[in-house]
Image (tube, rainbow over the protein chains, first blue to last red):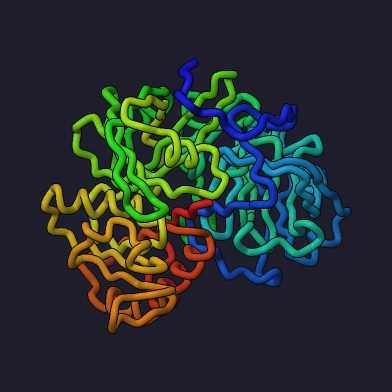
Amino acid sequence: MHITRGFTGRPRVDDPGLPPGQYDAGDDWPVLSAEVTPDLAPADWTFRVDGLVEEPRTWDWEDAHRLPPSAYEGAIHCVTSWSKFGVRFAGVSLDTFWDVVRPHGSATHAVAYSHTGYTTNLPLADLTGGRAWIAWEYDGRPLAPEHGGPARLLVPHLYFWKSAKWIAGLRVLDHDEPGFWERNGYHERGNPWEEQRYSGD
Amino acid sequence: MTDTFVPPTRFAVPGRIAVSEQAASVWQTATLTGIRRETARAGTFRFAVPGWPGHLPGQHLMVRLTAEDGYVAQRHYSIASAPDDSGHVELTLDHVEGGEVSGWFHSVARPGDQVEVRGPVSGFFAWPGDRPALLIGAGSGVVPLMSMVRHHRARNLTVPLRLLVSARSPEELIYARELGAETTPVFTRSAPEGVPVGRMAAAHVAPLLAEQPSGGWEAYVCGSNSFAEHASRLLVTAGQPVDRIRIERFG
């Protein structure tokens, strides 16, 4: 440990919900997309799940909204070290989509991709079991474009770059394949509790 | 691994510039060697980092401060200095109201103090100097862009480079003394005699896109999210390809 002379930091809040190296951003919700925010209308939004699945399928806005709703309330954690508590997202659990497409027994990972071309890789285990959503509402309102609206992937137990904005689909694979930030020096899994920020963490 | 999955998308995402990632996982001691005031709110902090592996203009690093009770604060900051192999890096930091890290830098730090740094991080916003660069920034968003301008000058690069920078007033324009013929400043609150006051607009972007260099511009946009949204829309509207725009939004 290397003490910084004269550094006291903000008042300590013994918050078990704050992963190591993170701080509470409070009311802020920084935007960190690397690409131009797309002008994507709900009517033009589609979400496809294919690859190693029994029944590849594409949902449009209306199809997806006919699925049983599911909500997430809790924290999100960005690799740039802010965390945000008490966020409320609504959409559909990814499990609902898995039930339809039925991944093969050989499936281990998925690449999530956006309508912008952004990609990020995730183990299938992180996308199942009620821990991942397709979300189109935030705080009771339509998700803003700069935050990924009309709809984004939501995987709140991993750093937020895994929650791909403007989600267009999931390609199911039998191996891991790095996505956009993972090829730019970031960790392949991104677990905030293990502080898996960069390659090699 | 064989066929990399390429998503079937309507938009394209900017490609990647490969960078060395060997040193990004190690925390190193950085010793503050000097502090320069840039504006009333911004200061430049120069560090000696003996093991610094070098960086590309536009990259950032992580800074870690540790309190006596073990409390740790980490932040990402863009690197302001050009890569010069001197074992030094510079950060230009705004004094953020209530900011625990920027507050320490602006109120407590003095030469000789040590912090920990890790990096360089991310190859996405990097500009190695290999292609025409159109740089658009606002406020402290000019910091990574200045690393590119300085690199361009230090290496006497001939590839075209332009900087369009927005500030509230001449007094708040970071690096004002260093900016040259490559730069067009835009002032949003007050400006020198005879210079119009107003938000960055299509008229500022149009002349830059009118001079299309060979291979076209690679655009780098840096600033607050609202500025980045505004500037990237101006670029797209003016005809800049969406897959040739790289954005770094300061949270």
